[in-house]
Length: 449
Image 1 (cartoon, rainbow, N blue to C red):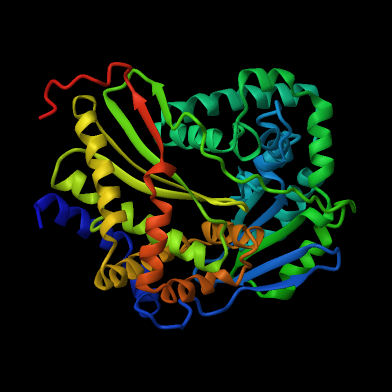
Image 2: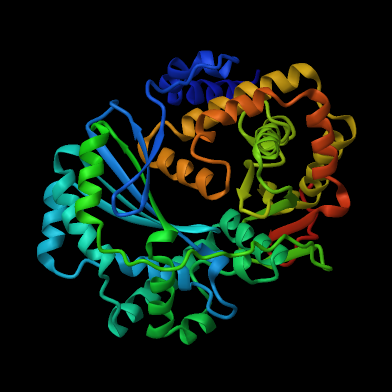
């Protein structure tokens, strides 16, 4: 192995050392869970479900409130509405409450994904009741005023510009927009200049009142505390959500656009080159195969794209990523390269995909990929906060919170024949959406040899 690759691999192992010790047996095929206690689900007296996972590794608690909706529920022309409405549930109304949070070491944050909005509260477990008392008042009775809406819109414009400056994020947004026609899953999380001008207070109120009602909400809690105190605190402080109707949103399937090439001109010293594919909807077998394919393509040393970086020197960054929605997965395989090497890099990327599709993988490579996929998942879920997010997303996707542990069984159940058939179908060249982000003059070949 070359020196650079060896150093990167050593660094990777050092960073994930605890994860490998915790879950080595599981990653190698054991059915035992890497966590001492299993997640469980119960219903609060208020009617809200709660997914609870006890983790005594640290004296901290993470409480996440999931609200169905997300970008899938945004009406046409109102891009950014889901994020805007959710962001206003975190608007701290006075300086005193800011001081309360600071003294408690409490954090509030949010995520707006394709099928939900998430409000997250993190704190020291000893401060949980005080943190819940303050945060619950804000979340259940947000101050939705014209002034706060205007201020949040300005923040969203800044976030949107920051996203546009990061080529992988800009590409992901463009891919979803192309596959879903710019609506629902394809709408902009932070909105557009036009949509932010259009959205007004009544739109924000309508969204909040539609989705922040009991049938559309549930909690995920990761904590070192026992279940009954958690139950009692959530029932005490989150009893004000009104009843309402469960929102039934029919997820839109992805459709490959007639123009299969996305070119975004950007004055940079690097060029982003990506290929995106629509995957089947995430039942347990499909999700496991999609996760294996993501790992096989671009997750670290040994992945199929790694050689373009370490051996061929055609990329300084490679990756593969699947965005899961209720209707599908969207797989992106990409690299970032010097502008002068963009033509060769694009050809090499297509060559890697073609070889994988046409020749498939061996049984040995499948075994290795299984282990790497499990290791990646364990690392991604080691912290309480990201684990609660994944638990909730599995629940929303219909896989259930038990898929936190069931994913590994599903991965083990994938046969070589299944995997190669999945790869051939997923990476069919006629299904590829091509993405290029960089300078307009990408045909430069000086130094591309």
